[in-house]
Length: 262
Length: 240
Image 1 (tube, each protein chain N blue to C red):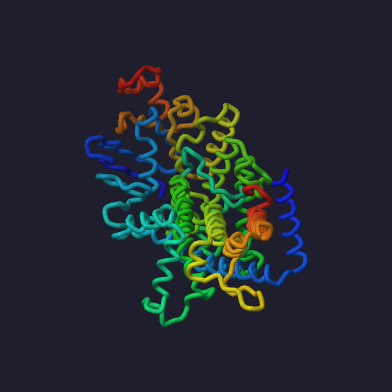
Image 2: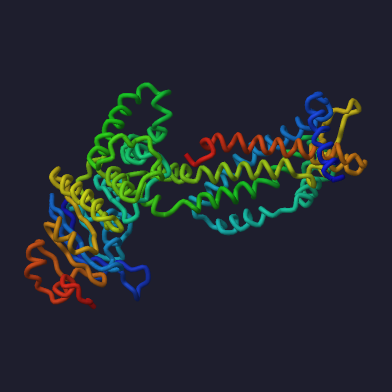
């Protein structure tokens, strides 16, 4: 599952202004790959295509040896359920922390489970399943350092906590591939460190992580593989060491050195 | 000063009428509530259905339907009353049912009046759910039905607002109910199709301003009570 291959990928809303053009990318299993690039380079779009939220205009998207867009694939839902996606904006539901974190499990548990709080009183056979859900929610919150906040409305939390709830919501279903879009954007250094620690901890659980960030220092800190996306195309990719110490492309070197890249 | 005295007298007569269990007043309140609540139930179901179809399906005429809904939000009640009157009158297509001058006719006209309003507010509630939330639901593995449920859940306060607005419009409406209901009171002073609003019109015409104002205050008290109840239902006055 965690092997993702993008081949000659193009994406555009209007034909004369492509967002992505000729992207080729290979994500290997159990790795932290960081997609670097300035704002507006197309990082979010790339992540959305991998999560099957957008259909590429042309090219191939291969998840675990299977091309997923060539024909109308009925298993998109199943495939998406093996991934986690933490959006740039936390996109939390107007509910409690626990309700948000349990959402992914409830979607997998069937429609009835949506009425989580209500059904547990009136449908006894669901009780065991719900106890399991509660336990997983509590464990996921523990992982992101929000112990005991299940019943708090998400609106009462800070931006950093929102981000962590969003992470917990994706982690609770134990995804094989975790996509993170600017997971520390707008966060203070302390919250950034907390989120990065969580990412490292998740990586140790054999989860493949693909992270988009405009912060090259972050890419240096946590990336094992690093790719640079400029103007809709990946100009260079490789190990973090190679990318930061011996980049082959002049544009990569300029980006790392903080020069204007065009 | 004179107005204030008049106003407080009206409040006193409203309280007197209420605590003396005046059968005339209570029959009017009964008709008002019954007609408006039935209209609310019918319109609520119909509006939910229309809002669901317009929001979640694309079909030819979809935009025209939503335009019709938004236009209908400003429908003048006398026009609705006239339209329903023509349909239910003896020579109209539904004249054979003998519904004219009955509470059923009033329920029909109020339903026609408030359905576009409730649907419009429901639609704007559904529209206000951000795309990022729908994407989040999708990426978290929600299937189509689960996404619909999530959108409806996120728009729940808009739905409640739609129902309150619909009920408020129904119970305070006078033009159509007077046309199709006929403002009838039995000879024993018990209302058949007279509502609080039509009673206010009658009492004002008779020069009984204090009774009219008292009825107005009762109407306001009912609307206030329902709003307070709904606010409590929404969670002690906050969103949570």
